[in-house]
Image (cartoon, rainbow over all chains, first blue to last red; front, side, top):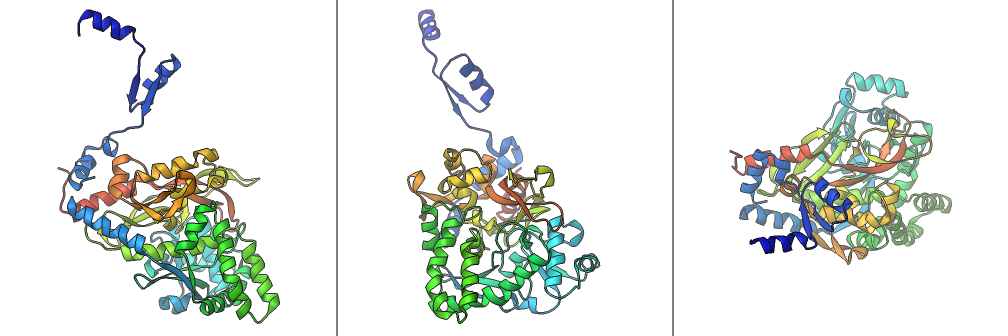
Length: 59
Length: 419
């Protein structure tokens, strides 16, 4: 991305999709930035053993 | 895994093909011959012994022992229970289910629901009404008198009417109830009314005594939860043919005894996966608070297992307020969340307010563990002390640990390791 495009990008209105932790979305929302929150968490709450089982069991 | 997909399609197929019909009311020892001998008490939830039972369960056991004539009074019954004078077994081990404490003993009348597709039967006692009742741990003279009336008057009258009319098909009745605002756990107003409407002509034709008939009609008409026990027997009759399907990860039972929460999964047979039961969050009747409440209890989660109750919250916005689950407009969110853990939807049990979304059907333990979304359960709340009864209603989640244990056992059954 050249400098002009970067400046253009930074000056354009932000369109934000936040995945996971809601705190980031709340901060942006508090500053008036439109943000879409996607409710997501790692499979099996991040437990590697259960996630491996789920991968093999085809969840 | 294709084997799991095939097994789960078969499991959910059996749920959808079920044809539950309320056909009779009989003494429990007739439906469950094992109850005829000895002092057997069937209770809600997975297996538990006296020393780990909660207050209302102990209260109900003392009460039912007096009711059956095994003890002269509540104190003697409690002492006998502690000394091992009674045998305790889960309802689920005998084709039965019971709400809250779930007492089922030899002389109580049980409603018989037959699943005509698979020729199996399930049983549940007759609902006692609200307030101080045995299912919430009530055990005083008034509670025992009502149980005697159910045994001596209501049960026989209902039996005659059901036999005369050939039974009441329940699948279509529940479909109509969903369209009238019931979710079949904490709201049964519509289904109770529809059942009464279906039964009334046969009751009139078969009752010899107008005064007794009037008593029964008044009791049923004044009990908005009358259908709960019918819905529970329906759930058991639907889910029993789903047990033991090799490679299926579908939940066949969820149940709690006030101390433990247990689930069973089709592909792991009749093993219970058990974790400490959680405390409902809800609204309390005047004079009571959460410090008075007992943890979650009852076999009634069989209705969530078939996609009703908390899974059908979107059909019953009035319930969201009653159980403290938020605004009526939020009721649909509960059902939508449950679609994340349901293997399919029921095209015959739909929710008009959600554009005729079918209720989420077939809880898949893989989806529960993957998403971290535990089944939502609508429930009554009992006082933690014996003998007091219901003090509120609320919402509770099934403990995630039951599903994690079940997933590990299921993986083992499938020859899969997490390494």
